[in-house]
Length: 313
Length: 132
Image 1 (cartoon, rainbow over the protein chains, first blue to last red):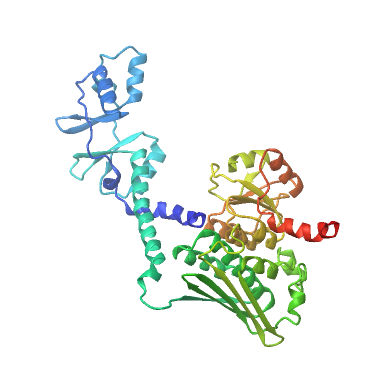
Image 2: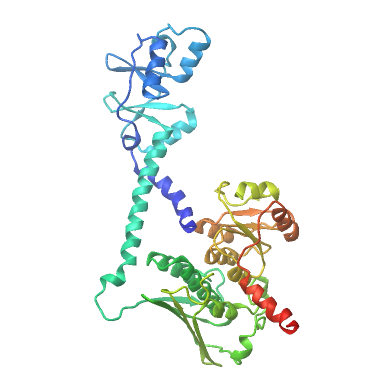
């Protein structure tokens, strides 16, 4: 599903704006008091498998103490010093109702391992580490992912849900002639659609390779045309239809390497005279009709319920 | 082979912003003819090409190509980079020729794309049919 990757990056950024720090933080906070010793603090870290805690005195946040402070105390042989002496007192906090993106910025700027999270009354409500942020984002992405899965699941059962003797889904795509920047967009959209319908990847590959070659032919040789995909439970049928100029000699056009493509098309890696051959090798059935100055009609059928004649591709 | 390994073997540079260096590729294909890419490659392939137009990315997407390396120090135009980012296909650059870039990767153990049934049958038809 490589094609969705680019979207996920923006999706992540979007999520950091949507989610609140409340949504990501750990709510059950282990706290310590300034009077406890560093040796006791070591036991707290060990028991809870954490690397730092807020320090509370009479319910008020007075500092943050971390594994790093413990290591320093160990190095100085001061395990019996109190947490109050070793903790960081200048505590940077976050508000629970702020968007997560603010926390991301603070982590990047201050490089702290954790931030205590307080409410607007100044009461400690949680603690936030970078790990919490990653977990929250993954959780949200998974929800989205499941939504997409359900989407696809429903789409792939469409034929079972329809009550009829015969059913077909028809998709039409318009192809603009000579527009190389948009060329391939129809095949790309069809690929996404077939994927959602739950068609097997090897079949999708054959369908979209054939469709893409046909689409490139419309772009290169015609003023534009139409691609119609008709999906039935047992097969996909693609038609590429244009209004000219038409192919004078179809037999010759079907010879490998025969091409009438102009130089600029060849420079783009197309027009090597292999397009129709490729279509033929992907298709179970291929019909090509053309009349000069009237137009060309290409029909391709690929069966979905068998391996087909090119199941290996 | 990981994309990170590819970059060090060809002494290449990343073009796309987010190239996942841990992304795995199984085989390589060097081609400037897009029809060849469409008929001989499949999922998990690294494409090496001297062409830099957006159609290379489109073709890669259709063929299920994992990543693209542009050879001979070519920098693709903005439209190509934009389309590749949209479609999630990482782009990289090599200063070496197609021959040397492919050679370095092949020597490092990256196999050629496996789908050569079509080219084999073509070979047999053209070069071995009259020896029977």
